[in-house]
Each structure stands twice: as C-alpha cells, then as structure tokens.
Image (cartoon, rainbow, N blue to C red; front, side, top):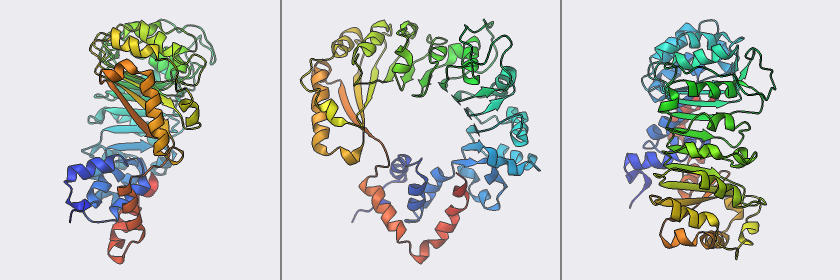
Length: 415
C-alpha cells in the first residue's frame, strides 16, 4: 500500500516548501515520522535569530541555517559578540542577513556585525526591517559592505540625521546625485517607501546612480508603499519582472508614464481594486503606456475576501478592454493569470465555479486563445488533507517520538 514515506525525498521537500513559513506545521511534520524529520528541519532551522549561535544544541543544525536575523534579542551577546560572529562566518549555507528592529546607534552587536560584513562573502540577500541608521552615508556604507549582495529588501528604514537642506517631511525634489560606477550590483529590489523623506526613499533615490541601474532585473512594490514613484522612476531599462501589489499606490496621481521606460519587461504582476469606480481604466491606461515587445506573462490579482458575491453580481458586464488590448498589443504574450484572493471557509466550490465563469466572460478573447488561467489565493491557514493528517498524527505523539520533540523544540522557540 502506498504511503507518504514512499514518495521521493524531492517530492516531500516540494510539498513541505508550501508550509515553510508555518513553524507549527513543520514541527508537527518533524514529529510524525523519521523520514520527514530531516526535511522539516531543513526549513525549520533555515531562518533563525542570531542568538541561536550561542546555544550548544545549535551546533547540530548549523548546516541548515541559510538566513540569520539580528534583533533586539541578539543584544544578550553584547558581552562577547566576536564569538557568535565567528560562528556566523563559518556557516557554509548562509545566504541572507536580516536586521529587524535594529538601531545601529544603540545596539553594539549590530555594530560588530556591520564591521565584519566584508567577510560575509556567501551572503547575497540583505533585509532591513524597521531599522534606524545614523545618516545617509551610514546606510549606503552598510549596503556596500557586502561584497556579493544581489538582493535587497527595505521596509520602514529611518535616519537619525536627514540629508542637509532636506526637512523630515519635505516634499521637494531630491538633490541631484552624480552617477557612480561603484556601489551595489543588485538584481532584486523590494522597497516600501513612505511619503516622508525616510531612509527607504533616500536609498532608492541613490541606487539608480550606482551600478544597480544596469543590473536590476526584478523590482517589487509592496501593498503598503506610499511614495512609490521614488522607486519606479529610477529604474526601467534593465528590469525584466515588475510586481506592483497595489496599483492604486502608483496611479493615485495618474502619472504612470514611467512604465514606458520598462522596455525589456517580460513579467508584469499587478494587484488592483476591482470594486473601484474606475474598474478597468487604471489598469488599461498603464498597459497602453507599455512599450515591452517581449512581454510574455501578465498576472492580475484582485481581492474578494470580504464579499465574493459582489464580484459574482458583475456577471453580464461587457468584456474588459484589457482583454482585447493584451491580445492585440503583445504578440509574444503566452498567458494571463487571474489570481483571486479569497477565504476558503466562505467560498464553496459552487461560488468558485461562478467566479471562474464571470472572469471568463471578461476575458473572452484570451480564453478562446487558450492564454487565460484562473487561480485562487486562499488567505489564512488553509491546509490540505495531507498536512491536516500529519498534524493529527503528531498530536497523538507516542513515546517513541519524544526524542524528536526535544530535538526541535529548543532552537525554534526563538523564531
């Protein structure tokens, strides 16, 4: 009789990858059977806090660590920071560093790590989440210190001292910065600036003056972005994949001519408000400005979590102008994927079928050409029958699995 453990390891790894951000599920899978233990540990111990390196039991799982997070909890190592830094440098699979709620003017551990950043030659990803830096030069120096940095994620980065002549909440144009041949060579950037002249805005206005202007391939704007033009206006000529999680953050000022510079774009991922008064106009206007002959994939997302019936009631509306324009203007377009964000607990199969029918009525041309795909993105903790079965089995954990529980309960408490 076929069982879960009869599947190849690479298939099991692919299944658990969908639950890689759910620590409870990974713990349950690690307690289910010995075959799932190493795969679960691979994801459980891949992202850990910096203070884990000071624990004796962490030596068994250092080969799994790919990302280290420095947070206020890391300050317990302030008395002897050189030892955990040396341990971090010895991690063979380390690929990313995350500074989380860190103030570089008050936290000594972060300062020691920053001093040793040039030695982290395996790190290619840096995440700054709600960090505070002394000034613009300090922030730029942090980015340039990693020799092989290619991925940068920014959210709510602030400066203690703002650039001279620029007030904290000033809306005037930023000063011109001469182009630099040095600096980071990023291929991926995800930035969420705000209206103020915060550290995120200052940094994304500086990056186009470095080598990143020619090496950037993927650009993402989170839904919480405010001053989004500071990001999209600086790039374009080299970007192949653009993701805008909330189109209203770009089109609020109705100035979307920036998209004309994205001439090598291959993938466009956009989330927009289907219930707005201008249901298709904002999206159609942005597409009409595009000059990307190699565009091959378009992903359109909208949210029906609150009221799916309101979208079903739109049945009978004429076909969307986006449908005919995409079919006509981009001959190399391979498929258009409509992603519907919904709540599985309030969306039975009958409503899903009706939603599919409504979307197909809007995209008749693409549907007839076989280029239309419709997917559902379920919010909340939606579990498959497989994961649910694994969790139920681990809850009735027999005595022979207690050692596995002890092996995984220590380090994962610091997530």
